[in-house]
Figure: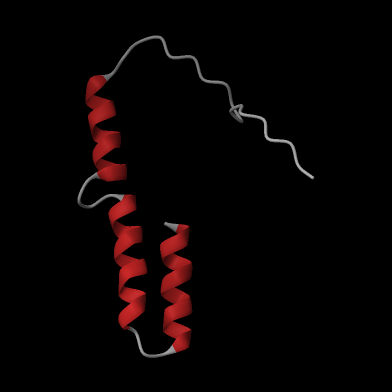
Length: 65
């Protein structure tokens, strides 16, 4: 059994909005060269690989991204 607590490891206090930094972070996570795109590419490529070792490697990399 486990208990889920929705709290941050380090509390964050935001005093000002920085729209430039928000735009930068958004492109890093969700843009064409972001983390999500890389993970999806790795997971899609694993279906065309013939060897099981390479499939396992691409699965591990894609889920880690």
